[in-house]
Amino acid sequence: MMMKLAVLAVISALFFTMSITAQAPETVSIKAGQRKSAVKGRLKIKFLSVEEDSRCPEGANCIWAGNAKIKIAVSGMYETKTFELNTNMAPQSVTMDCWAIEIESLLPAKDAEKATDQKDYVAKLKITRLQR
Image (cartoon, rainbow, N blue to C red; front, side):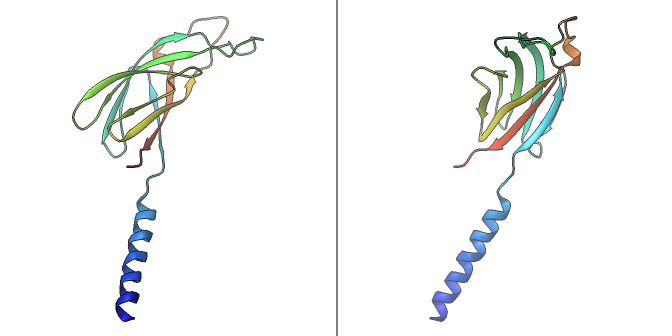
């Protein structure tokens, strides 16, 4: 009986510890041309460029919301890969090592009057650890 209680206590402690160490998604805001570290330095992300921006301009009445496509470079433990992410089309997320990287937003909103300078774009990315 005492042995069962001890085993149950150990299992409960392990379960409690595992549930506490589960990582919440990390959000990173990154300017075009900028490089940032994420998930405690395990990933380095560089926002290379906005490849297209056909989003509906603010204040306009559009049939379709449009899409913006960004290009990022992600360096993990062993390699660097380049990805394209879309705001309203696939793919909106990619995986690298054991991480999912998803675009949440791209600012500023499109302006009908003038083109946005590349350096003014800011992408908000959500990084989530994948379950094994």
